[in-house]
Length: 364
Image (cartoon, rainbow, N blue to C red; front, side, top):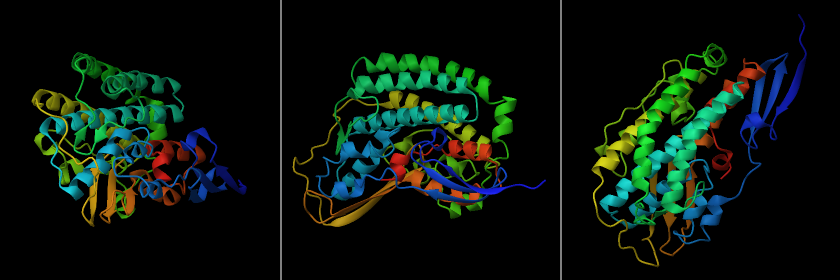
């Protein structure tokens, strides 16, 4: 049967591209023969904006990078400054940072897998994880009064201690969450339609994942056991017992399973941190006018999307001379042009959803 070759624009205004992403597809019938990923529709010049702000003034801007996991962006940026200056963070603040960072990872993954399920046709699948995500955002509202852009991490600690009402609320969440997750897994994990749409679709080998600079669940879904929290622990992550979930086949289904398993591991870390957390101050003594010594620093953490790095150059003034972010979503998208070839349009929608990227982070 003769097919027609034509060019199709998927995006930049399309719900399945998860933001203003444009993919130019060359199609032979429904099969992609060539793909070109186009970014830049959301560019905001974050890294240049940082050069005109003090180190502390730029913290709220980092929330706007991966705006679905803003608090971990704050953490990576602030820890880079602390490394550059040599600031020691109080113990209690470190535990609060870990608890909030893991709650943030859970919220991001729950939204990511929910939207993934919706993109492959099961609208009900987005509502169950959103119920649990809302509970997490309520906890953040107690902590700092915000649900999306937090501005909670500070150079030297956190803005304020955890409020009294947080502890009974988080304990209630800890009691209820495993049952909710089990219900969600029963709905999705063995669903025949979901497996048909995701298994052996968008397969990435371990070698391909590493050569393209993938990180986070997109890398671990291909069987590569790499997580910065384990291989190069920052903060106090070396004090906690948790596993690094990895996939086997490197397909869309494995990327989904890895995120679901990571939610469970974050849950374990939070329980341990709450049990171990000491009393004490939540802020170190930091100069009101911070002028880091001349030099540069690179610091990386594991955020919900992958390896998030911060590179700072100081010239001894109150503003960074140069700021650059290693955004995991940006690197993860680099494999799309290769990965889409040979797949049908419906499969490409599933692949895009399985990557759970954030265009705010891509177009920094």
